[in-house]
Every structure is written in C-alpha cells, then in structure tokens.
Length: 221
Length: 222
Image (cartoon, rainbow over all chains, first blue to last red; front, side):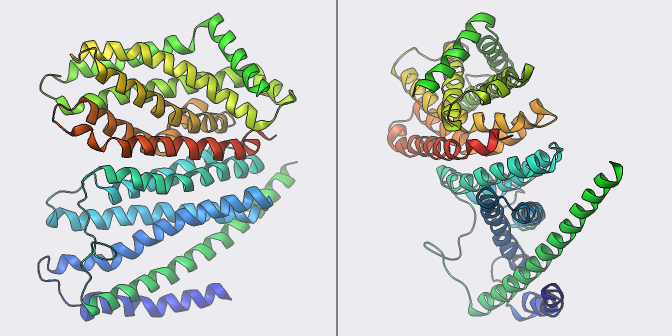
C-alpha cells in the first residue's frame, strides 16, 4: 500500500518538479540555461549521501540485531547509491564542461562523490564473491559500517586541496533567488519520494529473490 | 596484552623462516620506483615525487597484506588461531602489529632508494618523511588487516583486497601525499600547514583501530 502511494505521489510530483525546473525558475544570469541542471544534480547528490548513511546504519543494525532484513536494506540502499553517485557525477560533468571548461577537477566534493561510488561498487563486488548467504550478510555489513566511518574523514582530507565546487548555501555561500530556492526544494522533495519508492520496491523484490533462492536450494536437496 | 605478543611473535618467527613478506614488498616497491624514475624526468617534475613514493608504498603495502592473508588462509591456519583461547580484538591487534612491523621494515629499505633515485639529500627532511610514513602506514594497516580478513572468506581473495582497500584508504593516501609534498617543497613556509594532514592521519588510525577492534569478532566468526 505504501509503495503504491509513493508511486502515485512521485507520478504527480515529477511533472511539477519539471515545470519548476524548466519554466518557473528564472534563467541564471552568468551561466544561462545550463544552470538548470542544478535542480537534478543537487537532489541526486543529497540522495547519494543518504544511501551511504542508510548503508552504514542498516549494517550497524544487522551487526547488533542479526536480522537479515537489515542486510537487505543495506544492499538495496547501496544499489541505489551506485545509481545516484553515477548520475550525480554525470550531471556534474555536463555542467562543468561549459562552465569550468573541463570535465573533472580534483576538488573536495567531486572526490568524495567518486570515492562513495567506488565504495558502493566495492561493497557489491565483495557480496558477489561471497557465496554463502549468512557470511555474505555478516562480512558485507562489516564493510558497510567501516565505509560509513570513512565518509567524514574523507571529506576532511579533501579540504587539503583547492576548492572549485560552487558553494551556494551555508557558510561562505552567496544564497540564491527565492524562485530558485523553491524550485530546488520541490525537486529535492520529488527525488526524495522517488528514492523512497525505489528503495521500498527494491527491498520487496529482494525479499522475493531470497525466497526463490531458498526454494531452489530446498528443491535441489 | 600477552596474546597480542604471542601472535606478533608467531608472525615474526614465520617471517624469519621464509622471508617472504618483507622481501616481496621491498622488491615490488623498488620496481614501482624504477618504473616511475624511467617514466618521468625527476629534475623537471618536482611535484610528483610524493606521489611516486606513496604509490610504491601503497602497492607494496597491499602486497604485504595479501601475503599475510594467504599465510592465514593456507592450510586453514586461521581456524587454528580461532581455536586458541584469545579475545578476537587481541587477535586483530596482534595481526596489525605484525603487518605494521613488516610493512615499515620494507618501506624503510625502499625510502633510501627513493632518495637516491629522486636526487634527495639525506638530511632532516628524510626524518620527517619517516615520521609521515610511520603514521600513514599505521592507518593503512589498521584498516587493511580487517579488510584482508574479510577478503580471506571470499573466492577471489587477492583480487578483492585492493578493490576494498584503495577507496577506503584514500584519506590516508591524500593526507600522506600532501604532508610529504609540504616536506619536500623548497618554498619557504611550506611546512606551516603540516599539522592538519598529520592529525588527519592520526584520527584515521585511531578511528579504524577502535572500530576494527570492536567489530573484529564479526569478521572472523564462523
């Protein structure tokens, strides 16, 4: 039921967010139309961090409780993590090429995003090489928890470099036009709902996959 | 602390007998240095020296961790260790201490070769690099020991370790390269900001030593 609600809600919200991003929000003065990618890039970046936090916390819960549902949540959020780090990096590059005149800079946030993507992929590779269900859950959750600890330290370490990434909000940020803020808020909420839908749907599929796997083993024996 | 020393003693005794770990790390690190020295003109590219050193150190370090992994997984030696009446955290600390000792010995042989190939003077700067190497290696090994034990359970042991290790130790490599760059820089006042990368290296080691110590029973549980 929740899943259907989330699906309907995201179906309604996506056209609204698209309208806000392409029509409602004013064209930025210096960058022009390319700036509109901001309404997709920022929510996706936020959701990639969310995936990392969910992966770490679900892993910790599995280590404490030993319930496989937490492991399922961990690897489903890691899968979405791969998706959202990749889309964040791609949308960022599409923006950076005309504005910075380069596809890539070794900047704090870019490196953090790349490292997050590598950690998510490493997590899935580790799972793929662990054949047994129980040890797969146990060892990959250990890795997931250690990966969560890595994120803040990595963010600090990249402060050793020059910063190129625009800083709109928070200390040192210039802020933005109210219409831009509203459009960003709407698209962040929309992506958030879509993320919740994808995660719950993926977890449901994962549960069925595990049942099938179990039944196959029983039949083979 | 006694079980920790017992494990370190065991690892050192094995290393003295077969001399596999340190020699393979040293030769591999040396080869990396030689390839880089051929590939780049070191008098022109001042900025890449710290990178060369840490590429050699991290690849050699991974080789050493792989060695320690296969040492335990061959003949089910790990099983024997787990049967011993010792705390899982102590087992972790013992393995870290052993890996740290071997890696440092190999790196201390690589370092003078690096100094010769890259035209460095044997002065106070090299001592600074020794300090950075000690801190960086501790961070590298503290997480690497846990990850090598994790990959010991997988089918493709030697392949999976670098895939897990490199992204995880990125903060160590970034901080160590930056600190080494500050030491080697000829500009006046370049050393002013060195405390930040050094403290990051310290924080990384403390966080991962503590987390792995607490979590290690899940890594080796059967």
